Image (cartoon, rainbow over all chains, first blue to last red):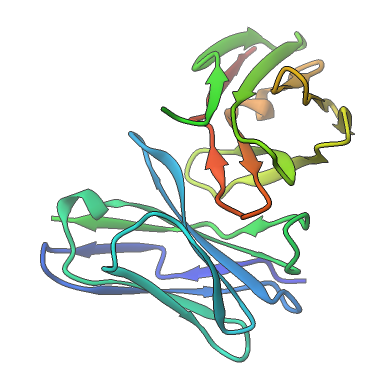
Length: 113
Length: 111
């Protein structure tokens, strides 16, 4: 079974631009979660989608948004990029309930100049 | 203040030796506690998942313990290998799914 895939793997943007990241979950997984990882803050939860609905949300500003499609693929969008948005963005999929194991993708490394 | 504190921040051990990583948390109540291993440049990989009612869970040479009374968890690595060099992250998941992550412990195994 193919694992979680994320595209692109690397991205360089400038301040003020917007970016869209994509995540394809493991086949059959309906939950997709997004995380931001930085050296200073570690892993932080952004949001979780289940069956095209945002089920949980972390403490990030409204510039961070996401959506999930009917095939469970998910996209994350960051608008008006700031230098502090430079991070590794990780996506994880699971079967859906909170006790189920999550499988992470390799991440998208975003650099904001 | 972070609700999940991990110690030590980093450690170096010789190949073949054992080590124990600590995770103290204040999140309560919680649904489950997880330990992840993250190699440099890669996404985390789940090692163990424990509900609040479990007190030990093993995955090969990795054994996690949980003491819900003292709000402590530990991850024990037995007979370390060079491939164990990674960051180990403790995650506490409450019922409302507001995940709390530890900052991680970086383990370096030397030959």
